Image 1 (cartoon, protein in one colour):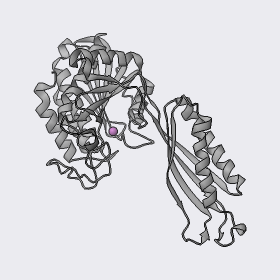
Image 2 (image 1 turned 180 degrees about the vertical axis):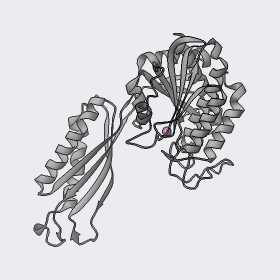
Image 3 (image 1 turned 135 degrees about the horizontal axis):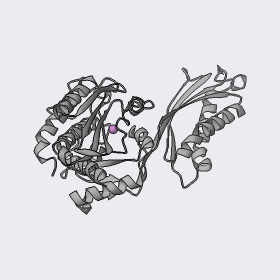
Image 4 (image 1 turned 30 degrees about the horizontal axis):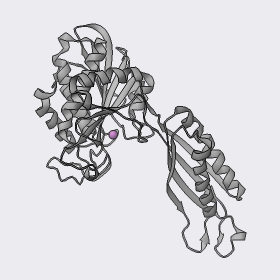
Length: 391
Ligand code: NI
């Protein structure tokens, strides 16, 4: 496999980055490590693209198209509980979403392709993005604004995400929606305070909020087509200070997940109308703030076909899984996929000897992907780049 001779380095990079995790928009050390490696390989490197983003351009022997390969570099505000010898040395910060692995695999892919530069037609742009975890802003829009998809013009993009739900080495994807849009909604229900024994003298914000929450669930069942998927989860509710006082105000916060951009577009109006209407019907009021986050991640069918072929011919038919359904988690890569034909694949990272129910999931403080999966990830990234440039 392409990665065989670089695996030692890839694992060392991953462990180094894992031990020194950095939060979104603080990826200074990681970015500097990445840029130094890419410069060492003779790539044209641009630092500080949209924050701590790094772009490395590998020019092949002759002119042609440009393919973009993307990884993310940031960690999460969690305290690591893996007990690994290379566990986080940065208290309260952890690579619990595998972005350390993504970065190391893309560096390994750069090693592979840099060695093959004399047989490549066209260019490969290696994109290391900051702030993937920073919903709703994200790190991709800043890199796009700073021109990472131009000079030369990037024609298509590939990315991967380690996925603990699948066994090591499986490449899982699908054409069309793969991951969801993720928006945030803030609601403030206002009534009028009164003694708990005299509700008629006030307007109960808690009762109004309860009706608003129940009413909001009808949006999904009655205003969104049954053939479209959407989720509205109210995750926090705060109101009241004392058991026998009717409070004036209740604050709610939730997340909205959608797969169809048209459904996402309609959600702010549907939520605002429903929440205000219900609250006002009870004499209260409701203010709604809707913050749009990452768009749905839509994989381009043509790019998926190219990648499927690239994976099958290198790793065998069994390595590729075309998922029946998308997942309602979200990914900042969606911003790139909105600009260019692109695809994301999930890379299985559950070791053979670990049962599915024992594997810690993403964003878990015990999350620990199988390093064996790296060579498959590199095979996918390098294979897709080569085949896309040759197609
Ligand atoms: Ni992630």
